Amino acid sequence: MRFAVVIPAAGRSLRFGGIKKEYRLLDGITVLSHSIRLFIENPGCAAIVVLVPEGKEALSDAKDAIGPLLLAKAGPRLMFAEGGAERFDSVKAGLLALRSFDPEYVLVHDAARPWASPALVDRVLQETIRSGAAIPGFVPPDTIKKVGKDGIISEHLARANLRAVQTPQGFLYRGLLAAYLSAGSSAANATDDAEIWAMAGGAVVMVDGERSNNKITFPEDLP
Image (cartoon, rainbow, N blue to C red; front, side, top):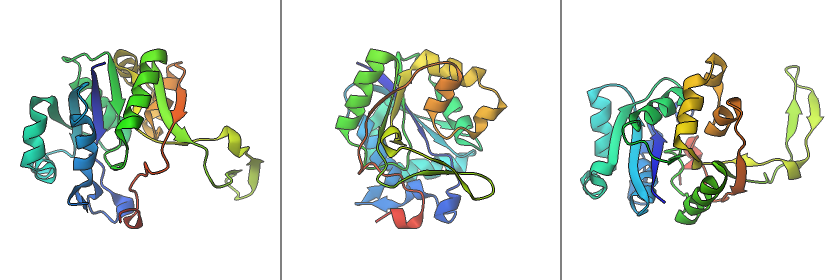
């Protein structure tokens, strides 16, 4: 099944010390290149939109980080668009950039998750095709507590009912675009696409994630 991918990479990497984490090297290529290569090597992937910071210099930096070999391998399937101040703005811009392509399905994947596997992509896609929306996750190894603003525990959550959520997250393209276009101002604080989908009344199915599919957020997350 052919699908398109949105990869937000327009953030400022503040928690990484302000150094663009997507452009750091991992096993000889950049973190961003790992995330792009995951989909370039998938025969069902028809288009990839990478969201970059505003400006020609930022676009040039992104292309330099990807490198000429991967750019050539990707060819016209790889597109770039300017992201926004928040993840919400970037994903929305990516979805709009796919309007003329109008894919049936779209995956949204964090640029800073370079360890996702092809098997995970297939698992998310198959459930997306079946149910319309699917995201990967796993039971967190730590006990999670809900805490109030006063610092006092307000709820002891059952770990078996919790999931640590990952990407790629898969959706019907037109449905996710409509959800983003109709989302109110409160949606700007959403931390993943499943939340936006749910705001529009959609149900999301959870599939098994991968513990190795970590997100690079802090300097110590990058080997």
